[in-house]
Amino acid sequence: MLRLLALLSGLLLLTLSVACYAQTSPAALAAAHTQSKAVPQVLVPVSVPEPTAKAIRYYQSGNVLWTVTTLWSFLVPGIILFTGLSARMRTLASRIGKSWYFTLALYFVLFMLVYAAANLPLDYYADFLRPREYGLSAQSFSGWMANEIIGLTVALVAGLAFLWIPYLLLKRARRFWWLYIWVASVTILVLVVFVQPIIIDPLFNHFGPMQDKALESRVLAEVHRAGVDDAHVYEVYKDAGNMDLDAYVTGIGGSTRIVLSNTIISKLDPDQLLFVVGHETGHYVLGHVWKTLIIVSLLMLPVIWLMQYLADWVLCRWGASTRIGFTEVGDPASLPLFMLLFAVFNFVLTPPLLAYHRSVEHQADRFGLDLTRNNHACASAYLVLINTDLEYPRPGPLYTLLQADHPSTAKRIEFCNNHHPWLDKRHGN
Image (cartoon, rainbow, N blue to C red; front, side, top):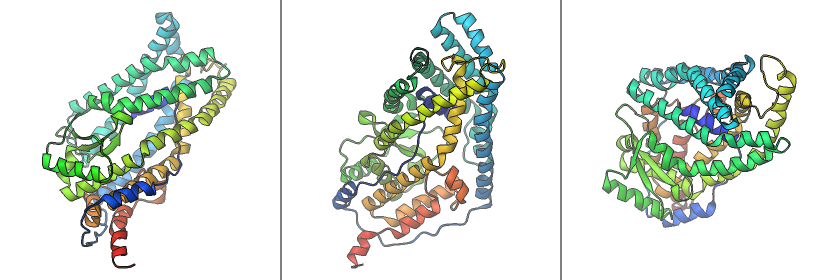
């Protein structure tokens, strides 16, 4: 259901994330390097392990699952659109809702229930059965189902609150709707990123201060050493069955925070955790969230403009048929059409988007290692991830192109082993 929520957000904003290479700020890295009082460690290279048979099965089954999920993202909105089901739901909604907004709202509720039901079997396998099968989760069915219901509820509330904006623009500004929707989308996008850590994330997990106060003091000292005096560090408390090792930066402005899960705190030793904190601080210092927002906002405009022409082309060719049942993009029944176009653009733009994410993650790795100067803690932290999350150390090029949003764990371990400019300078190299 979280995947459903993410897809809905993209549809509401008509947003497509595209890629660009964000350069690391040399000034920020130099400041962190200068302020660091970390003692250089004796280099103990960490070997990249061969994947276990279980990890190989998980990797291979994940590739099959990705293929099915990708095809499913085309099939579901395509079937709802081209069978006329969307038009029939619109007609039913108009009979009951009477007014324009209530027709749109009722149609959206019906559509989301159908869409959620169509995706439920795949979500059940991908998010519940498969992690349990591989020992990556012990979450109860009730706990998983509760998150699904919360996700659907959030999606419905968000849709009822915001979906009227693009459809009103489609209805009233037929010629330049793409321009006005872009302006509205950027505004809503910034708002969503700001409120997500404050309102949405706490619906799924409990957030609070770190429980280990001694460790919290070390974490805050490292963050301050990187030149960040106003950072907020939170611990997210996973339920007993959730074994994910999470660490991330979220929010913008006053809502920005570094989040560490209780699972990663318990799995990593203090030095390893400090490297992870350094990595996340790198995202914060280097402004990756803001850079991504700006890039996406600028590139949304030509993408939405192109979607206008594709939507008009589809309706010009098939809209008059009794199967589709509508001829105007401003008709509420057009929602699966935009979902289908979104899925197409998402697939096309996935490789550059992932390349951008990998470059950002590498920048954060470099920042964290320059800050902590602890090569062994860096490499061994990723070794823990391999052993805990069944990471496949050296995935194939097709996987990297289409699925990998982080560098491979093998490359990250090798970088941690070999990146030590402070030692090279000390020895005159």
